[in-house]
Image (tube, rainbow, N blue to C red; front, side):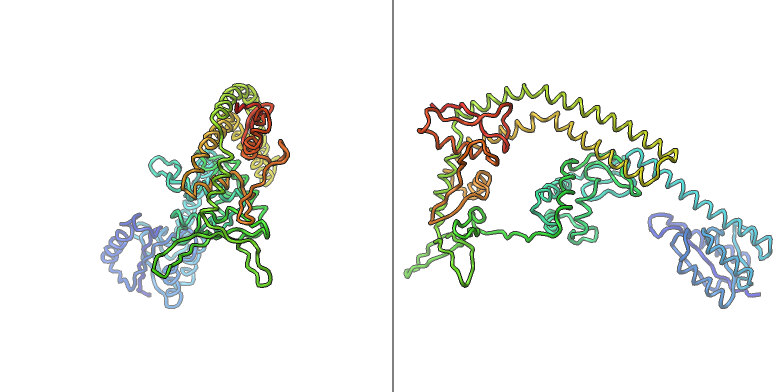
Length: 527
């Protein structure tokens, strides 16, 4: 009889801080047992891996040696050897072929007889049943957890898993960066690559420490987790945590991702203050700035900044001359002064804001009530859909697709309610801010902060500033109330009518004043 014994010890995980004493305890018990039974151990096989599925390297190596040379096995319990039918069947087969002479366990009797192999098979089956039951219980717990709105896993970047309270909290450091990334991409002038660069600039990287690339940026921007829903097993669930972005913003990002087929080229950052603000009136190219130093014969240095057209061509040269920054600055300051808001106009607009706020309260309340009723209808539909799925009247794929649509519609309505409830605040605050900004425009024009002037001019004139013959001009509205006209254009026109009309007037809408869609009110006197 072959007296070569292989000692086999195993624990279920390779994580060092779990089951720390399992291997040491097994080795000590098995060595003591071998000493008592006069068993000579020829080799020890130690493994830190689950036996749920086949493929353990040390276990397979031990059985390969037994299959070639024969031998015996010493282990703490049959469940240390196998918890799956493949490994358990191989052990029993080696007993059948007598290549495995015997099995010894301190806590389990096993003999190489029909009864012994039957008991061993029962032990392997019991171990597999334990694993299967544990897996099924875990899956059932997971399903119940997601039905309660609890995400069963590690949260994406921007959130933190609180292990103490078993809740998901917003990461106050990274969440504003994620929200800004959504806002940037929703504007349609950013690429996935630039979003990854933006995240890297704000110290947000992938788990391997590398910059977030296009595929990962796509996953972040398309993940419903960020507005309050999450995917689990290809199904959408409502989460019990706070969303980082609004559903409306998330929808806008999805539309941009569908619409764009190729990334745009990254714009270069220009060093001078007014770069990117003006265009050449002759060829339409951008105006750029260059910093120059001129040194006189006596060593005196003079510093200048010139702005000129960026057109580069060997066959054709742009006829527009360059302009000194001082002259350009004076003209931009003059344009900004023409859109400053007089104090009496500001007082009139603030009075109208107060009246419109009261008038809009009733309409907002009606819209909120209507949407709340629609949400209740969706809740009823969701319950009917679930009942149909549980009664097996609806296929799983149809159930998931319809559920996703209803949940998406419900989320949109909830956000619309929130927007309607704060509708007055949403249009009132921007209008109040615009009145304040327009009142401060003269101060900005007279200040020496060139970057502040550029920001103000960009907001007011957009891309309508042209440079021709060293003169800056902006397109003024020819027809009042025309489409595309904004509040700045109306204000500039009102300034131009002073001294022409008996009364300088500003356009007034029928119901409410709103930025970017309505002109300013008529009837504001400057006399």
